[in-house]
Amino acid sequence: VQLQASGGGLVQAGGSLRLSCAASGRTESRRTMGWFRQAPGKERELVATITWTAIRTYYGDYVKGRFTISRDNAKNLVYLQMNSLKPEDTAVYYCSAKDPIFGNWGLWGQGTLVTVSS
Image 1 (cartoon, rainbow, N blue to C red):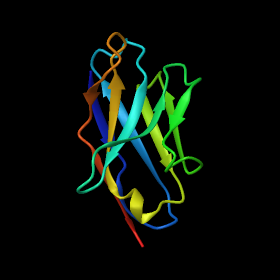
Image 2 (image 1 turned 120 degrees about the vertical axis):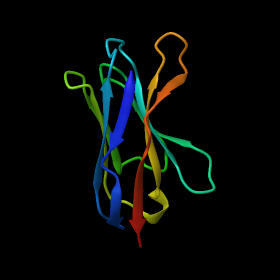
Image 3 (image 1 turned 90 degrees about the vertical axis):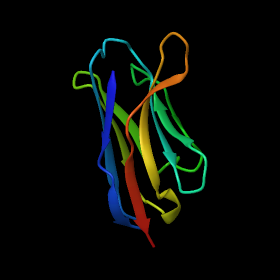
């Protein structure tokens, strides 16, 4: 499975962006998907996750109420709607797929840069 993230860009504080993650290849595994981010000089952190059925989602405290993760399994797409963006949201955002057997985040996309200006 290959993952391709897109949708990043430059936005003013308070604005919105929607990131997309397209999965290609052998996508038959029912994987939990996630978005992570890494700001300059900081460690990568988990932003949000969504299970295959989308029944369960998880959000980091720093994005709760502002970001929404969703997925369209028919199109092999995962989205991250980001509203009320803050300068501290500036980071490279990565999508990832959890291995259904081992439970680790084993698959990663190339990342898309989000820059929020104040």
